[in-house]
Length: 195
Image (cartoon, rainbow, N blue to C red; front, side, top):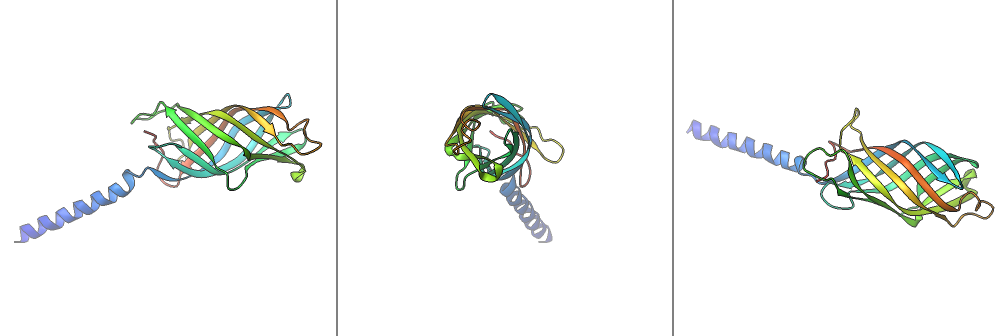
């Protein structure tokens, strides 16, 4: 009788442990935050360095969009002083990752990011000069986990600046390019493994 009771108790403990694992090990979505690491933006014939910023949003490790940023704030140097690149609420920027996804560790998962024509705002001179960016850019995700739990997502590509404020169109118009726009990102817990 005591043996049977012990076996039932042991089975209950194992079942509880498995339930605990299933609630975390197979989670496919969650929140993600990030810090701008490095990169530059080119427009009006010149290239300007970007020095810092943050992003936040969600991730889905089995479906697309793989990442969706709902907040973004980046500071870049321009001839008009520091420019702030941000998302216009309630816009989001979706990242689709379609190539190089396996069950193992992938260092160069490829895809694209689409910026809507009125979602990404560039602002300087305390808001006196503004424009909106649009375009489709390549995205690369590295699943290697670095110190602090960070993983890399990098954007490259070209788009168009539109809707510039009067008097600023010479600088905030035409094409613009993102070069190695590198973010450190991490989920609220664990790490991201796209499959």
